[in-house]
Length: 77
Image (tube, rainbow, N blue to C red; front, side):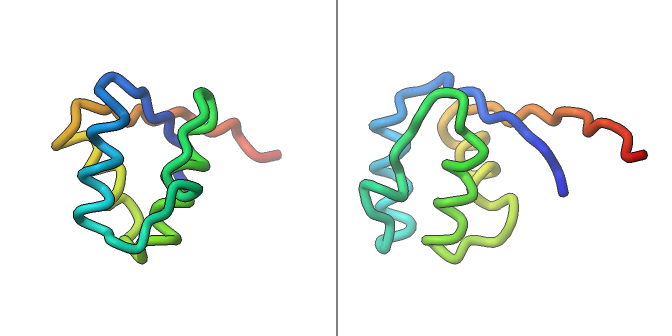
């Protein structure tokens, strides 16, 4: 499982509109953004839209100047 952080660097209202255009089934609850809980946001959108894993991060990164940063996972013991 990859851990990532989505940094919101663009206008979330515009991105929400574009996501709704692309994935018509998304609701306000699906698109509710809370700073620091970006991973949950992406997972919610993927689940609600039926998007493939990574598709939402790619959409946001490529089209809306949002950045997805990988974080190293701690070693398992």
